[in-house]
Length: 123
Image (tube, rainbow, N blue to C red; front, top):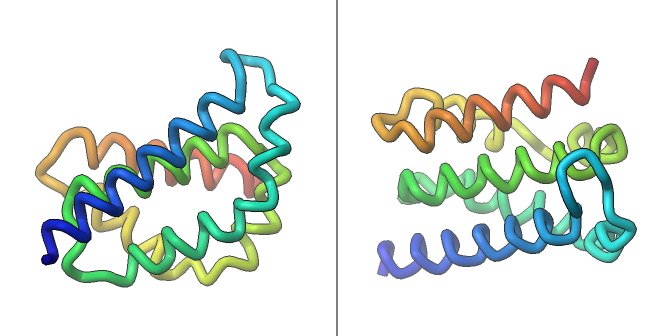
C-alpha cells in the first residue's frame, strides 16, 4: 500500500509540475495563462506539506516535491513570497534538507535547486 501511495503522489506531483511549466511559457517570459493556476497554489503547498510529513515517502516523491516547489518559485517569483511565509514550512524545509543528503543525484540536485529558488525570493 505504501508503494501505491508513493507512486500516486509522484504522479500527481509530476502532473502539477507539468501544468505549471506548461502555463509558465517559454524561458524568460511569463504566460498570462499562469494566472489560471494561481487559485490552486495554496492547495499545492498544503499537498506538499502533507506529503512532507509522511515518513514513508519515497526518494522519488521527495524529488518531485522539490521540483514542484522550485518550479512554483521560478514561475511566480516574488508573488509566491506571501504563500511561502504563511505556509507551515518546517516540514517542507526538513524534506528539502533531507533530500540534499539523498543518495540519488536527481533528488540532491532538485532539493538544492528548490532551496536556492526559495532563498532567492526572500532577498
